[in-house]
Image (cartoon, rainbow, N blue to C red; front, side, top):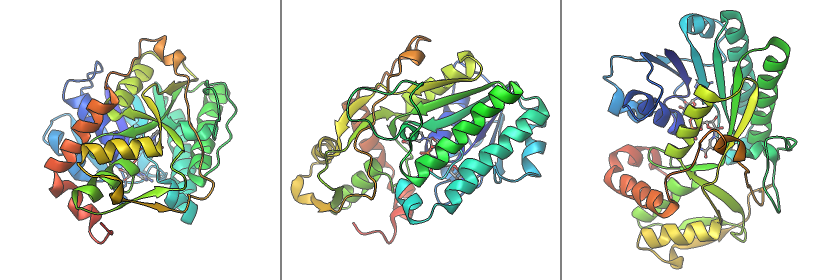
Length: 325
Ligand code: NAD
């Protein structure tokens, strides 16, 4: 089996590629091609543990490139599409790249997939497409109601993916996952931003009242869910991936402070993010019916993640140069 992983030099995509090649996955491809544009968030070092693997090929390029993508798809059995602009705060400042990569890039992949007769296309999406929910949890049938430009661009891509399934019978699957944490996450996202700042003795910013709720899932559990959808997901279906651990940003901050040996004097309140979603919560019963269960307990996963950042300053220090500690 030949798998094309787009965005495979980013945080989750590289975890997925390492997993495919280091024997953790039940899927044992004989070839893995990574297509990644190497934006600020893409990093070849994320693939260092498998860089010498004979089954791995790395292609630096853009999922929105209409000349490159058809060539790459000519002999591929499955695409897993992680490539995206992913940081909400950046999308609030300027959303142009979000629409270009997340919407037009996905459309370019879908068009090429159709032309190539691709057997399976898995699109990695997010719970943020559902908007914000005060009580209860979203099932896959919930209407899309995104708030940030990032989430709106992801929702646009989801609708295109479903349209290719309904119109053309392209064999697609969509995953919508909650917030991920783990090693190799770019240090602009909250967990690595807080951890690397505290390790440098700095203060961390807490948005608004800190009571926004997120459902945290270890990246290994997310990738295990994607494997399952790739192998056993029904054509044209959406699968939520969650069930990690719901908590407020204050609780998350408290756990990170404790694990880093710091206290609340290292936290400075900052004005809330514009349009900040209050709560995300997923019902992932549909994937659980296929056998999915998250395996990494949050405290254990957080401790392992902090240990990784503590042990790998050479990975993150160049990425935090110039940022206030
Ligand atoms: P990331 O920002 O760490 O990595 C994105 C990768 O995509 C980078 O390697 C980047 O170079 C690449 N890329 C960007 N534009 C590209 C383009 N035009 N062509 C080719 N490559 C391009 O993101 P991540 O956190 O690993 O997220 C991966 C996917 O998972 C995204 O689709 C995101 O929406 C989704 N997701 C993320 C989370 C989370 O908590 N991080 C949660 C749910 C879903």
